[in-house]
Image (cartoon, rainbow, N blue to C red):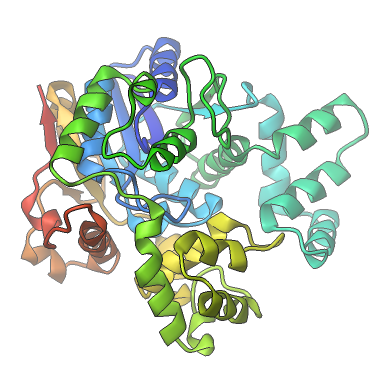
Length: 414
């Protein structure tokens, strides 16, 4: 049995995602396709454009058979912990045979050479990394520079330096590291990213990054995207987006976090901020100062960011502050890995795959939540997913009551 595993956010599912899905399926020829997807908040530290059930439905309509949720504590973590959590879920299902991800590299040969250095961290690498961090570089930038500085001169070194500047390649390396750490038999494969880059804010030949789609929709300031944006997503995605907008459940843009983030920062003593995951000395004062001057979310992030601490890291810190996630607890989660498999949606084939997973996986398989889950060992992690939905519902165009995770069943597509 061949099972294709994907790690996704689908924020929202667009034509580039459809290309990647179909090319991955062509390459693997799987019996089943399983996606691990971020919930209502994503790795950039932002709320998703539409809720997790709607995005799971987009994936199922496009040809994914089963969608599992990546817990909030991993979905909103740094690239390393994001990758470790997602790969661990694929591994723990006991059924996934292949992991296929997008990258600008288009080949794993050079990226795989990086993995042993990062995992073993030989003294020369650690010394270079420390030196570049002292210069004020962010961790990803310092790590990339440390790696390339140790590489022999030549064409391969130049290619590596270029590759490690891309977010998708950085994630690809982390996926490979996670597979190595777990000693997983899952076979990694990659598909070259098509046309539009991760940070590109304009479409290219009918393909736009999710970042571009969200940016252009927010810029239009309309309830529904214009026809020009409609052409950037599959018809099934468009119908789901339209339904969610008409129901008052979309779109949700980061700016909706402004009152929450600003009030929490202004009211929280600087010493309390130091306990947040990924915090470093001095950054708490920078955040407090930014909050005292900013009047919008975008302005808050712009004032707080720096060369060493990019916008996405600031946004993750703000989210963790809103959810009172402390470094000590986050570290425990990162060490344990995901503690459950949460089902967001499936089709008829996915239902068959769920039966196999139930028989093979050592993790509990959760389809419908009830109050008894509060008494389980994994509630400490699961409660953040529940809180994420409850907070997300307050950001909707028509704010909704909480408790959805206890009342909404998985999406089922015939």
